[in-house]
Amino acid sequence: MSEEMLWIITDDTKGASEPQRGYREVSQERGVQVSVSALEQKMSRFLRSVGRLFHQAEQQAAYASGMQLDEIELSVEISGEGEIKLMGSGGKAGGSGAITLRFKRLENGSLT
Image (tube, rainbow, N blue to C red; front, side, top):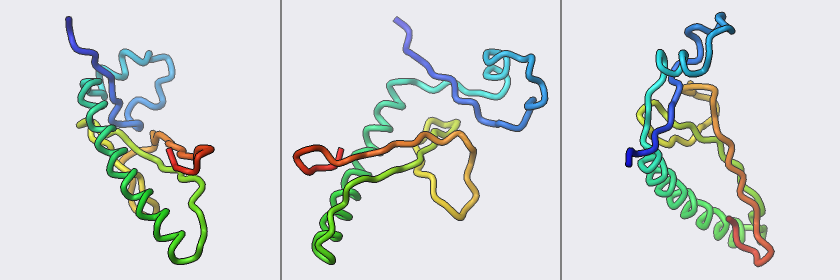
């Protein structure tokens, strides 16, 4: 059984004026295939790290001001190498195809 692969398009600017071209043709020209299982592992690692940051931020907010962290929204990007990157502001982003992850507090009070 072959491993599942996902196409990552790496450059949005080349061929943008050619709307008649199909996704498959564009992806083969400007994209790379990344292993789905490798992406799963990297996303899990990324979310564990971000979870630790959420926990620390929540503790600090409660300690410093008695406030409760209720929602967090992150933009992430998957690079052509399959790396999961947190998108910041004010800098030069690698691309415009960000994925938005929104975490809201559960009924029991913890963030997910």
